[in-house]
Length: 456
Ligand SMILES: Cc1cc2nc3c(=O)[nH]c(=O)nc-3n(C[C@H](O)[C@H](O)[C@H](O)COP(=O)(O)OP(=O)(O)OC[C@H]3O[C@@H](n4cnc5c(N)ncnc54)[C@H](O)[C@@H]3O)c2cc1C
View (tube, rainbow, N blue to C red):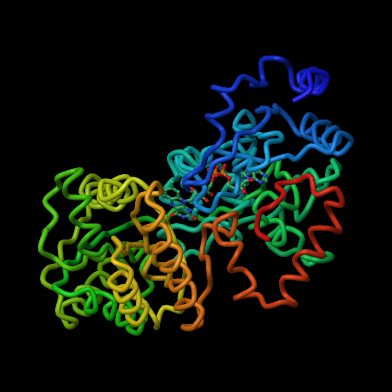
């Protein structure tokens, strides 16, 4: 990058908030995928005004800008694949307001999601979206990806909690979308358009989120099954009983074995599947719901049900679920995390098809995820240095997407399209849908400055 450009960027954000040597830049070349791209410079703005200046300058110099939170994304969304500026928003990490009358909070994009949970819960409030990466990922990244998580089953995903935002447009203008009210139908719904826009339509510099009162009680059940099919059928059977648990997570045998090897918590190594089910609400409600769930699980041939009520016992069960991502990489070094999602009723069929794909391409394909909302996470473990294996992976991934679409589902339930899924976007949106998306992008970003090459 030319010295005069580096000098100007340092002038905008301060010398101490710029990284330009190669070792530092490499640290910002990755995310949670195996994609890589080294930025020409890494910049940490401290406020919205600095973001405005940077984006205006990038338009003048025709420099690409890649917004970035914590870099935990699973679709390659923050990768600066053609150099340019990595714009890291982690310095903007203040919780500006928690308001228990209007049931909302105002946060900067660099706030860590788990930290926000702790702060609102201290005041008896509740922010439901809970990506499994919540201890590291940022609110800006969550909004840009429209992140989900285990609790999405009952409570919905990030977009259901975004009331308004401050956004810097791709040409460097400041825009306010939405507001502080739950109801707002003024103009097109730009809040929804920007939520899930994967850093391609604007840089989010402030977020107003909706909060709920914190549920009073919780109970968690770990349910063990002898067949994956019985576990998958149980998911739909629970829903048919009219119970909507807060979470309903599935882990298959490969996943159980990897987790047990890593954290040794006594999971049964011969079980074919586990469901982790949590209910929340009033004391009466959780007792009633967990009893119904236990009955349905036993009717659907589960081997055992363990119920935890105390916070430390529930936390022990959740530790298993949170350990999954790091545990499965012991199978092979390259993890391709998919999140193709199907209507809930199709989970048993999707599980059958995933098994078939794994056998056909002779690949490790552990299945886990948010079974309650049809958002399974088939992960393929391979070695990116083995071209023959990677060819099989590519074919398997295409078949997974095709299976999800055939069953009335979608390419991505929560990880976004980014770099990883863009070759398949037209399968779901069709030619006209894709043209519509591209028209929006070129209207707001005529110089193609913001996160170019992502989504399509
Ligand atoms: C172990 C693990 C578990 C995970 N579990 C889940 C899960 O349960 N549910 C789920 O949904 N995801 C999950 N993820 C994926 C990931 O954590 C989420 O997509 C998260 O929202 C990304 O946040 P981040 O701060 O890391 O964003 P990054 O990875 O840095 O960026 C993600 C995208 O957001 C854009 N972006 C970031 N900040 C801004 C901003 N301020 N303005 C505009 N665009 C911005 C980037 O350009 C990029 O396109 C998981 C990831 C890992 C590694």
